[in-house]
Amino acid sequence: MEYKDDYIETLNPIIKEYFNILAPEGIPSFLYDYIYTKEMQRIGKISITCGTKYTKLFHHKFDFTNLEHSIGVALIIWNFTKDKKQTLSGLFHDIATPTFKHCIDFMNGDHQKQESTEELTTKIIKDSKEIMSLLNRDGIKLEEVDNYKLYPIADNETPKLSSDRLEYTFTNGLFFNSKDIWTLEDIKKIYNDIAVLKNEEGIDELGFKTPKIAEEFITGCRKIWPFWIDNDDVISMQFIADVVSRMSEEGYITKKDLYTLNEDEVINRIKNCKDTHVSECFRKFENTETIYESDEKPTHDCYYVSIQSKRRYNIPLVQTMQGTKRINEVSELARNTINDYLQFKPKKYAAFDFKF
Picture (spheres, rainbow, N blue to C red):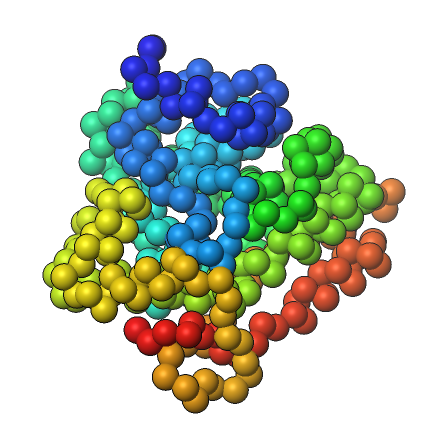
């Protein structure tokens, strides 16, 4: 099939090279048709940064979309399973993602699990004539691809290693906040050491062939993990959630808009909102370069939050002479690195220097 707008060819060269690492044989041909459906292309206009790219608090090297993340997850699954159903479940796992991604989970009060928007996955796939036609063509049932939690290689509980968790860890290390955490060569070295192992429950799980590479992975991860619970990340996501919530309450935006408009279109509505307090505060947010942090509640008039966000981390399996173990069981370096992160606590309160 030929595509009028070849999305893959327009990708950042770094992303294309990264995809080649995940799937050395290339993107499987059957996957292209699904990638180019309207529903999947929609999430190509949603940044995986959950709105943090819209403030000067962060300086990402390049943008990475939710579609690119989903393709990455699918390629990892395909590389290790060669199973179409599992691969498509990974591709579809974020198909129900709204504009600003996990910020909407924050709006829904789901700071910890960040899964509140996933319930629409089945409906979106079922309502897509394109996707359902492709599934019928490939002899695949809806219920075999609408829940990636069915497949442990695709998804599992923290701190196990899954394709989803591996993918966003890799890419956050590549682009997040201009930090030199690892290069494409580092990722290739780590990825080539990964294999499907049996965990403590006898269930398939991604793990490492050698402890040394697993240690290198954990060392890199330790630089990434704090980003996801740091106060600058949490306050940015909650602020966007509160902006969208207020606009929704005042009738300037609807829940449906979050699934039909892209982020630029939603931001345009925010900046041109008739509620000038909303638009003015968003512009202040865009230009914010620092936040106030303290274990004491702010006493001055400002926008502040006190939130414990989802703590994401990995304790991967590794092959040893004594059998399959968790890396923290066989490596003091990994154990200390993981424990150091688990003991890390941001300040209790975070604040902007403006009121909302």
